[in-house]
Image 1 (tube, rainbow over the protein chains, first blue to last red):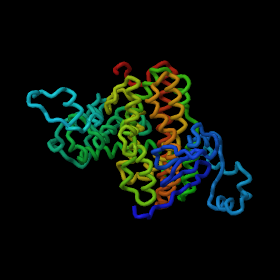
Image 2: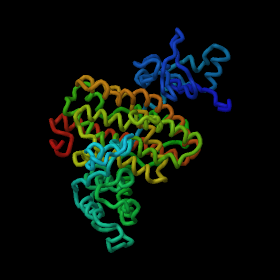
Image 3: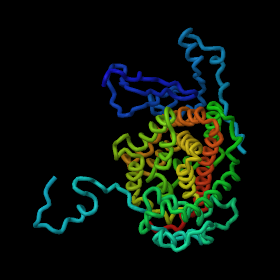
Image 4: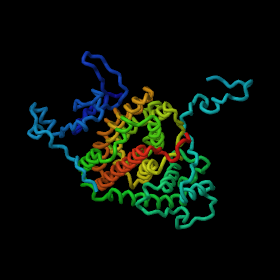
Length: 101
Length: 373
């Protein structure tokens, strides 16, 4: 290693989990390091996973909605307040129609 | 390593089969034994494949008449004869066919016939779900929204629900037999997309495929997890062992991905197919796993299902956003193909579920002729 490493990233997926990529250490609150050989992990964001902290896809049946656009995430980080849009949940369920040919 | 003793000229059987100088080749798949024909086209194909391809004596502009499938195009997707012919012609690119010359793989005579079969398959698929063009606006957000919508459309019968709650052990074994056609080469068809992608789309694809192949650990390869699962249910684990038993609808699932994978022109559809696979995998696999345990299935073997729940919950995001969305951004012209591929995956899955559930409701086996395993 020459010291130049991509930063670890956390991606917030719309209506879905957080994905952690890059070098990371998973710990319990008492500081114990939990072994994992996964290179990328998906962490539950909806609270409904049976495999917390990992995502198991339950956000779909839970109809978890959070568009997590860059603007919204940035707004929350800056003002510690949801955007007007973020406050009215349930408006992002596009794609539940059955409009197939 | 020990040296071979001269005093023991006949090696023990185990050494002959699985271990070569320290290399364990027990998991190396062998070419698939030729199956029984299912109609005139597959019969003609099998007869042809048994010849040396460069000595067949004729080489004309038109496909051989005996390799032409004559049925109505709308029945192409569920025709045993046509689906078997396609499956055999594709298998030449994977593990090969026993007793068949490897030179057939790229032989023009075979490719010409296959092109006609592929055309029929595409026409039949488009007839069932609509043509690729005009399926979606050519931008990543629209493509991702369409994929989400397809994944959320749940108008087919729930095979995972049946397996979780009520299937008996024999039905569960049937399910595994069907799935062995794909899962013993799990991920291979989608790997054809790797050399056709680049940049962030490629790294998204490789992130998924790397997990599929066990990230360098043979035993964690999904195909090997499936083999372990099959063994735990007392099934034969040889690659292609159950080919004769699976109906057209099972072959269709594999043939669709092979067609997309082996034709660069279908790379968008291949990506869309993978995306839908990943987006509709976690929850059903959780249910399969519960069904497996309900029926007293081996705990260690359940890892196949458990691993799919966790890995695919992560793959789903990468496949929809980074892979399909990324490809739609890089090549907007492929947006319609991406959605088409996803719809094809859904169609094949729904047809498969319907076949199993209908067979079982009629107290029939879902396999072609029961009792051979």
